[in-house]
Length: 98
Image (cartoon, rainbow, N blue to C red):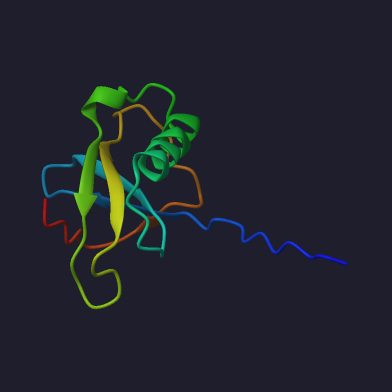
């Protein structure tokens, strides 16, 4: 008998609000995945949560910091009229290298 263990991808969804009120969101995982397929899945999550976000406005980021070093995510501007889903956590700042 063969068993196949499939891990469910856990998406980390965060947002920051700038001093001027601009809201920026980020979707990433706690893995080191950085393939085009992985980045596309992150973009699909964003499009599902915020359908009006233009995919061309999304930015792939390589993160720094103690807990998220060498992970990749996708950042985007949250539209002014959009309601932020409850699974997005507000943080103070992103530590994006590029």
